[in-house]
Length: 90
Image (cartoon, rainbow, N blue to C red; front, side, top):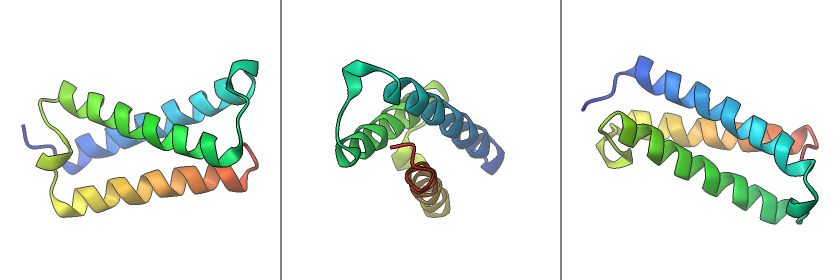
């Protein structure tokens, strides 16, 4: 399936919320006490896994995205993780 910009935006918005909620749950859990670099890597991996799963739900994958969409996804991921770090959440 070919994704539209609107569909991708919906997926990315969902991912932003999902990872933000994961941050809240992770930093409040004693099981996930880790250094900020490790936590950032964990969140990055979770973002990628969740993106893959959401795209599979649309019968697509990252390799099917146009280069502009791939760039948009990368930029949104970096902006999210940078925002989390700047807020001191990790």
